[in-house]
Length: 163
Image 1: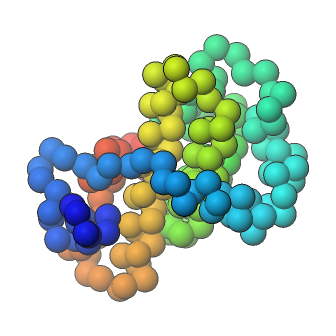
Image 2: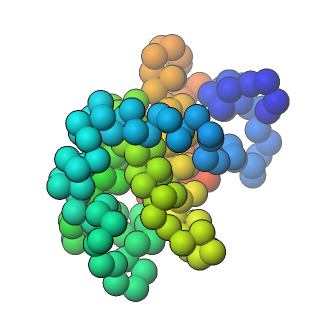
Image 3: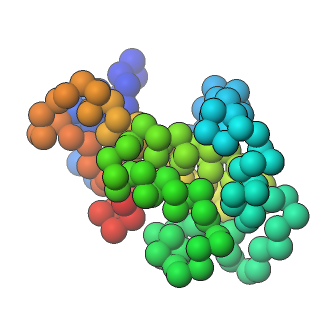
């Protein structure tokens, strides 16, 4: 995949069967996330007022911090609010906005998580897969490519039920 964007790799099938796009934290995200917070929410305080579970003082119980498709489907809307908002935007076809919300959520998780906890790392990877998937969909939409070129969740290590 050297020299090709994620979308090019997806569209031109340079990723082999059974493989999926690597979704990692990029150094550029360290600057981008605060800019996205400012653009969409004004400041971090506004973000945490809208989503109280993002406050550093929020008391998580057990594995509540861990994110999965099941956690997003839970009736407890106080948890994972930004991820839920990202999912709503994804389902509405606002993939660029969804990807930006997912990226903000990834930045928050990366900052708050215990990096020695494997389940926290898995939750971050789950969020980053959504970042890349929504970016690929936004680029596909922007380029007005045919349905055959549409990226699918499996390419990003996601299942249909996780999207």
